[in-house]
Length: 172
Image (cartoon, rainbow, N blue to C red; front, side, top):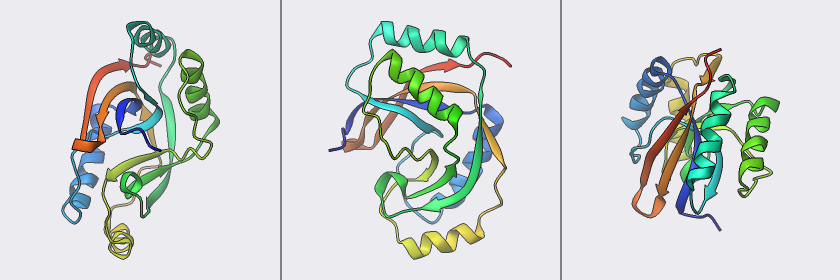
């Protein structure tokens, strides 16, 4: 069963990439109603709590590691509320290493079917309409840089995703 309240570690993007992603999300949200959430790629979680020691460990990890390059596969959609409409990201060894390093700091339920993605809309939307919309959206860039790790406090029962901490990766 999915934990609807808790904390997640998300990957975040720089200002320019957020502007780019928002321009695409705006086009998607003109067609599909979706609750608001910040641009992100889910990296780890859920955690029932976030203690200071764990937050300090994440901060130190980011301080000592460069940003990650995320290779884009393309637009995708499913009949799943939290993977309704998204940008699929290649499941690389670097992103799995990041997940493994975070798991070593504090265990979380590892999903063996991890499918990295940047959500553009949440909700139960018509699959045929989603596939038609994909054809109308702009071509995607070939990659994004994971610039930081974000700690998100989540309460899905009220559609609330609040970023409570941000840790920038080291400048490369």
